Every structure is written in C-alpha cells, then in structure tokens.
Length: 177
Image (cartoon, rainbow, N blue to C red; front, top):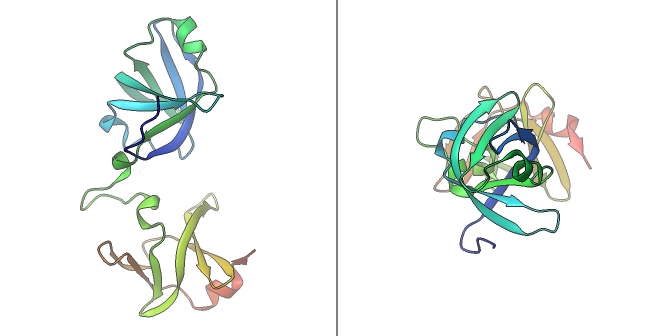
C-alpha cells in the first residue's frame, strides 16, 4: 500500500530485530533522531519496493538510530522479517518550527546569494564529517559550500532565497564535477 497523497523521506533502514517482543533497531543515516517524538506512522519499503505503513507503538533513540515497536509486529520472528527494509517518514515531520534548527531539505532548490549577488541553486547536500555542505549548482558546475552559521546571513523561506557571506574564492576552490 503506497501513500500517494504525501511524500516520504527515506531516512534509514531496519538494521536488526531488537529483543523478543517485536522491536526493531533502525539505523538512521544522518544519526539525527530529534524528529522521532513526532512519529505516529512510518513507512517501510520492502526489497520488492512495496511501501507499507506501520503504526508506531513506541520509539526511543538508541546508538545511531532508533528502537521502534510497531502496533502490528509482536514477536522477534516478525521483526526479523523486516531486516534490511528501508525506513521512510512523512515529509512534514522534517519541517522545523520557528527558532528550531532547520532540516537541510528545507532549503533544497533555494536560490543562493552571496550578499545580494546570485551564485546558484541548492541542488543537494554532502558532508565532510565536520559540517554539512550545500552543493550549489551554477551554470554547468557544482560547488560545495559549508552550511555553517558563520556563512548564513538570512534564510527567506517565503522567497526561497538563502543569503550567505562566504569567501568569494571558496566557490572556485571547492568546484566539483
């Protein structure tokens, strides 16, 4: 059963069964589980690409992910059968409230301006282990720019613009293909 009316984000995968009562350990790719208290329904994608909704009975952060108990999974055999399945959450969970740290996907396709000069669009994200990186597309080239508070002047969600102040040479130094 797919969820055609809403978009979902793949944020992890079921790594293993946990305990005897049907819990699963979900490895969260970003290791950020700050959104987990908002979960009531999640979607699992089977190896055959079938997307199935699951009601969350309870959830708690654990290591680099979550321990989850689904309403309809009641023993270890059922939870072991889900091992390797992709873990998706509704898009609206990954929307920050005012004053909260934003989720990277919230600035996807935003115009990037160096002060007031257009430099490109946010096309993807990366990481160098220390910080998140924006992949900015300018003409036929992509550039990686650290997405750090020192470089962010303002984010205008309504106009979908990201005003930044990073060293001008950074774009030519970090050009990627």
